Length: 252
Image 1 (cartoon, helix red, strand yellow):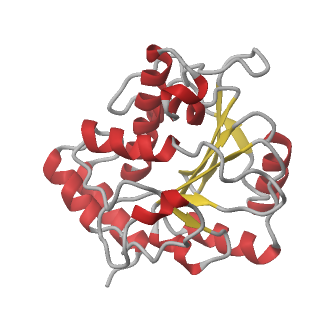
Image 2 (cartoon, one colour):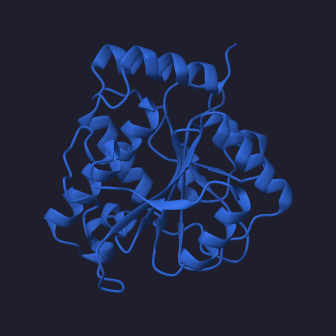
Image 3 (cartoon, helix red, strand yellow):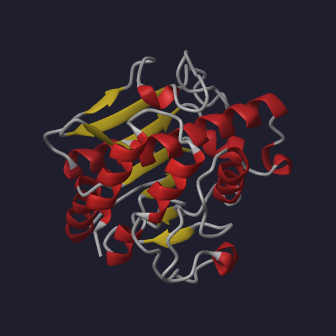
């Protein structure tokens, strides 16, 4: 059975980097992804996560150490998966995300990993080694700042990729021009420090392996309406941009 890197490379050749996914190409792509592993039963949301052996696309939430609230944005990924189902042809393994630890072998079963929080993010040396191997083997990590995680995130990224700096992505980057057009970059969902929404990334050997959405809070915009009471246009913008991120990760 082919591994994640070989399957993702095959998918990218079939779909073409940066193009919206036609239905048949999306099905061929996702069928080639690595098998979804058993879910850690850590929260009620995990009860309906994909079973072992599933081949469709799913998302894993990164359970990092350091004391930060890795479990926040509790309804965000459920809503994102529903949006992917409704607006793309990507087959999904289930309606809920899984949970994966940065040092676990199960991390390699997911092409897309999400992290968020307000507090401290900290990796052990073993976790750094495993996470770097995952990312350089075809995996993708999206970290969404809930307001407060930036200092520890930047510190850990320097440890993770000491030779690849975290750089700001230009508005011309293809992640803003997938299924939906965002010519001005990330949409601004919450005020936070009041500055513009900014997207940073780590590019390793020509491929974006880490995305950091800052002063934006896409995750809160994805949450159920009654949690933050964001207006419909903000929630729609958060959903569209997040679908772009998923599509980009699967085609590059």
